[in-house]
Amino acid sequence: MSTTETFIAHLIELRSRLMNVVIALLLIFICLFPWASDLYALLAQPMLAKLPEGGQMIATDVTTPFFVPLKVTMMTAFLIALPYVLYQGWRFVAPGLYAHEKKLILPLIVASTLLFFCGMAFAYFVVFPVVFGFIVAAAPQGVAVMTDIDKYLSFVLGMFMAFGITFQVPVAVVVLVRMGMVSVEKLREIRSYVIVGAFVIGAIFTPPDVVSQFMLAIPLWVLYEAGIVVAAWITPRSN
Image (tube, rainbow, N blue to C red; front, side):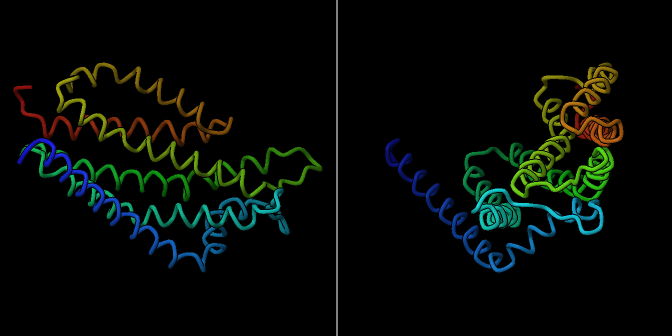
């Protein structure tokens, strides 16, 4: 088979995989659409639970009450379909990988996905109640906290991304060690710098209170240590 024919075959395969992904996303989105408002209510629950009795969220734009739940539904559909999306991507690239690369990449993809979901869950169930409780408590007397639903969604998505990426630290550590870019011993030596960096990141990506900063910094540090343990376990002793 010529180079041109091989390239066209890859394009056809890629198109097939992308079509499978799009169809899966559309089907899930259509199934979830009737519950779009309920999905947003579930996402907003950590904030609503901290508002004073009778407190509520607001929509400042005419189309916001429709489009914001729609965005949440699309995000939920993508998260549900993510394992299938990654599977399609894996089926596309797997034929071009060596056996030892497959043994490393597939577990990393699975672990990365699970850790991202764990990061989102940690933010939703642990961080949000504390952060929103602090925000409501810090409001000056006479100020009613009524967050715009679109801005709330942007804030929540940012926090989900921050904690989802933070929970990728063990995967990043393992990859760096396996690629020979850094040794386990070196990672242990720079532990103190990582701890300081974790608290700096916590201060940047969380509201300005000590509790929130600790809630991002400490998991980042613990995950770094977990990455070192896993990297030391899977790396040959000669390295």
